[in-house]
Image (cartoon, rainbow, N blue to C red; front, side):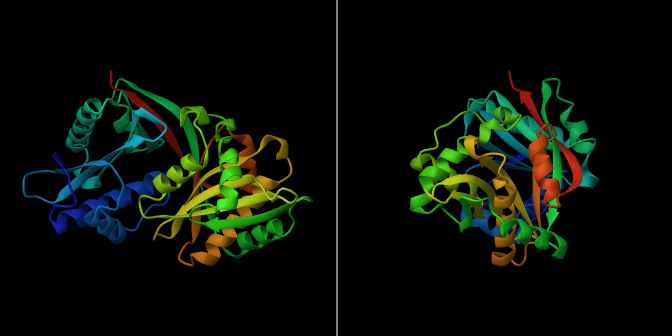
Length: 323
C-alpha cells in the first residue's frame, strides 16, 4: 500500500490507477468519467482535492487496487471513501490494506466517520461488512434514463406543456446572475426529501455558497447542467434539477427540489424533462442519465417512472464509525 501522488507518479501507474477507478465508479454509481480524461486531470492537478492510495501485490508489480478519500463539504467530520480492487486481486488482503491506510489518514484529519456507496448483495457489500462499526444509512435504487427515441418523445411532450403561470428553462455551468439567488433558495429545500438529512446537513444557500457548490460539483472536470422552472410573474426559480456530464456515455443526475408552495404542479417532472432534452442536444455522446434515489422517496420514484427511468440495481449508503 502506498500513497499515490499523480503529479509525480509514473505515467503507467497513473493510467492503471485511472482505469481501475473508472471501472469501479461505473459499477457503483452507474456512470463516471473516461479513464483517459481522468488520467489527464490527475497529472495536471485538476482532479479535485483528495487523498489517494495505490496497492500492488508486490513491489514493482502493476497497480491492482485504488482508494480515494474526500472530505464531505457539508461536514468536516465525515470522509467519503471510494475503494476498488481488480477482480483477480480480491480476497488477498488488498482491500483491507487500502482501507486501513485510509482510516489512519482520516483519523489524522479529524474525521470520525467514513461513508461510501456499495452495490447491494455484491462483493463490495460483503467487504464493507467486515467492519464491525458499519451501519446502513440508506437503501438507494440505481436507475438509468436511456435517451432513446421513446424517452425523448416523452420528454418533449412534458416540456411543451408547463403549468399555467410557469415557464421552463435551463443553463449550463454557473447559474446566471439574475437566477442565482432564487436558485439557492430552491436548493435549500433539498433536505425536504426523505433521508436527505443522512447525506447532508442544513447549510446556507446564499450567492457565495451557491458559487462554492458549483465549483465543488465540477472540480472533477464535469460540466454542470440545470433544468429549472420559473414563476412567470417574478421570473424566479421555483424548481430545479441538477446533473453533471463528463466524457463518458452516462451523465449523473443529482438533486431535484421544488419550493413548497409550488409543489404538485408537475414542475419537478417537467424540469427533469427539460434537462434531459438539453443534455441530449448539448452532449451528443451521452446516451443515458444515472440516478440513485432513496427507496422511501415515493414521489421521486414516481416522477422517474413517468420519465421512463429503469431500475438497474440497488445501492447502499453505508457509514463506518472510526472511534
